[in-house]
Length: 252
Image 1 (cartoon, rainbow, N blue to C red):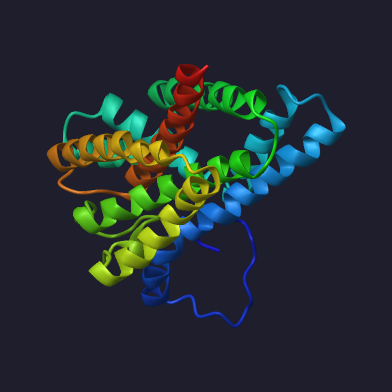
Image 2: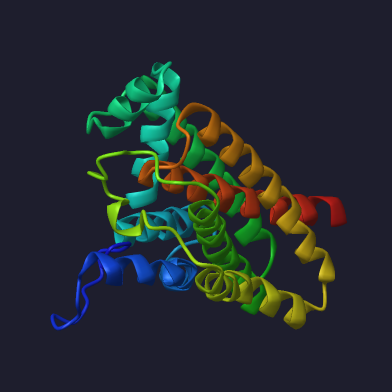
């Protein structure tokens, strides 16, 4: 319920502690969101030519099911760090619900790169389990990387009055281990299914991007916010797509 628009049973406890502990399932949410996205893509290829429309519908589906939760965070980070020069100013801009120039341009470019990366990835190969696992991997790995940021940095807002309040308590080593299993599972399944161990090398650019984000957030904010996690998720998701596209191009 916290990460998507999907309803949950009414009897579930929504306390801050429960929401905090549910963070370990963030990568598992990636399975769900990615599954919906690839399902919409597959159905759309039956009804329309497998070029642009199915990919666009797939993107719309994933954005709808998450309520543009992570895209909003990415846009806020673009606005905050683009227009703010102090921690207080950056946090104030990111909290503002209005979308500025930096956020508009950044989000537009991000979605464009994601669309064309998916177009290159999904239309080159025939639809099957490898394609589906690649799509799922992008969603689970990106959410796992975001979860590792929670483990590595403190929460930056002192009043905790923000979307990330329920997860601001951080993750224990055991919780991170569970999140890691959920995050890596689709990629490992892809490696086993295709017997191509080179896919594991895609973790390298992900950790390089993660390191840069952590350095940047620590320098300017002294920690992370919910918007920062959204930005990490969106950028690393695109990095996974680009990694698959680059491997396809090199192997041609």
